Amino acid sequence: MPQIGFGVWKIPFNQTAKVVTDAIKNHYRLIDTAKQYGNEEQVGQGIKDSGIERKQLFLTTKIFNGDQGDFDKLRNAFNEQLKKLGTDHVVLLLLHWPVFNKYIESWRALEAIYNDGQARAIGVCNFDVDHLQKLMDHANIMPMVNQIEFNPRIHQPDTVAFCQDNHIQLEAWSPLGNGQLLSSPVISKIAKEHGKTPAQVIIRWELQQGFIVIPKSIHEERMRENRDVYDFELDADEMEAIAMLDEEKHSIWYDKYKWSGNPNGRDNYIAKPGEF
Image (cartoon, rainbow, N blue to C red; front, side, top):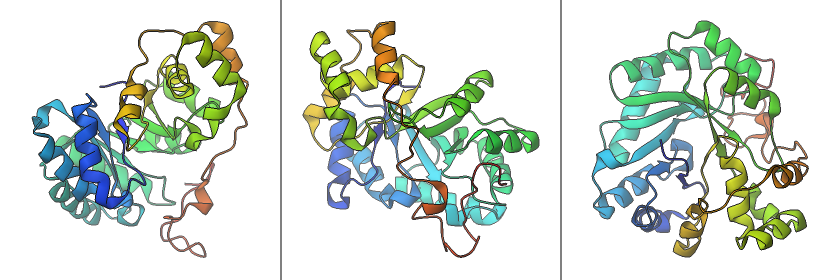
């Protein structure tokens, strides 16, 4: 599994195919998309345009909140996702959010998809300890990945520790904190000392904690920059200085998530910690 992937959330639709092709040209092999991003078809086109063999790519997509809960509905929806992506399988399939009262049944569908070979690995996104424990209590196949919001401003230590203890690979979305961390004096000072950019220092900080990191950019120079992080290492003092930036504030929270469905009902309601 590549340590650094390429995310496509909020990339303009008319640029997505080219940007994906550019990312592959610049040696990205993990491409991360989702039905909720609305660009799976463009991602599939970008992969096709790149000319790369499909087996060389680690393609990830996610199950839409509105498709969760019903076994057959989820599987049919996923088959449509595969058509848009132009493939018969993905390497990693994730539940995008822990939808209230639905994610256990949804996981059963993911297990079937995995057993049928349509996904080489299955996992979740944005699950905290309560969600993970509940899921694992009912699962035949344990989640292999948990993709969470993680960067120097939001650490989610309990979730991280639980995943590490249970051999669940962690992935970081929003690894650069929506760009807000790039002007941090602490990070800028460390970057200057290493002859690196703030983005490179942040990505290195996350890699050294065992995370798979999913940055994004529409610019090829920054794509290359985000991968050029293997010729230096942060020492313990630098790691701690960056960790001290933690505010434990999510950029998006469960009950405010704009794709959670009707905010006055629970059709696609995102389960808060402690809710199932």
